[in-house]
Image (tube, rainbow, N blue to C red; front, top):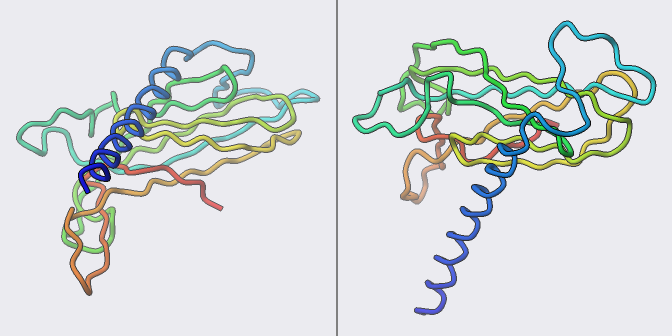
Length: 189
């Protein structure tokens, strides 16, 4: 029994370290590589290239909403890292304050908080690319193989929030809340 517990603790530590290591690698490569990060007023993609539009909407709690707040929630320092190949960029989202709803609702985004709308466009050669998106503030990384076609391509991401309570109760569904942070990022099909 003791060996199983040691193995589980070791596995948890290593998976957490792997995500942190990936985020550090992405941050060190930001602004390097051969693909292009484009603005809103860019020209159409030339022959042999495609534009990949990546979008993500996330809600976080307001800044200083807890007594000891060590996160960047509710500030412009809460950012998205997105890229493909060797090209990565740090994206600052459009922030809007949201009020309303009651926090004990089963809606994971109910309550007062800050909504971020992240959008980035990458110009990549036509073909298959490994696209990586990360939220360093939550230690979350998603790597996805994407087929880039000539013209415009979309990759829409969505967050999966952490559980409201650490303890499961028999007969009650697991409820999630933005207040606890993002557990992982998934692709909208």
